[in-house]
Length: 152
Image (cartoon, rainbow, N blue to C red; front, side, top):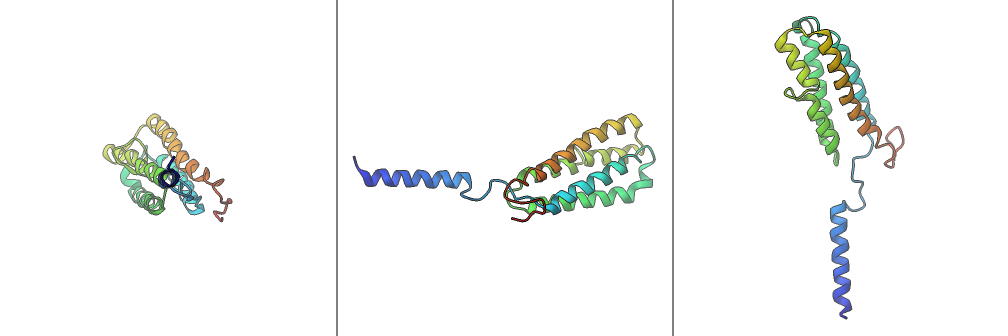
């Protein structure tokens, strides 16, 4: 048996496996206290704003625009972190005006001027769950070599 060939084959196989697994680096971004706080703060403000949706959108337009800007910042923050695709995708869905989360809720509120209490209540449940998914993605990273403050 040709041992040098076998050794090169094993080394090549190991290199390919390491390349596809991301080497020694974690496969997900480390925990970020800032990302976690963004998600919680925006969730609380979003749900509070949604409670006003029985009133004309024009009365809350400034708050809605401010919330959209903050969600865009959270998305850009998530997008700028390496190996953070899952959180970035969740924020993308949250802000999409054509989706059924916060961006879609605000677009519908603006289009219809005011929304029914029943619709608001159901939307709050769905959107709250969406924010919880983002929060859970970040808090799930705590065991990824970091403590609650995000320190290694």
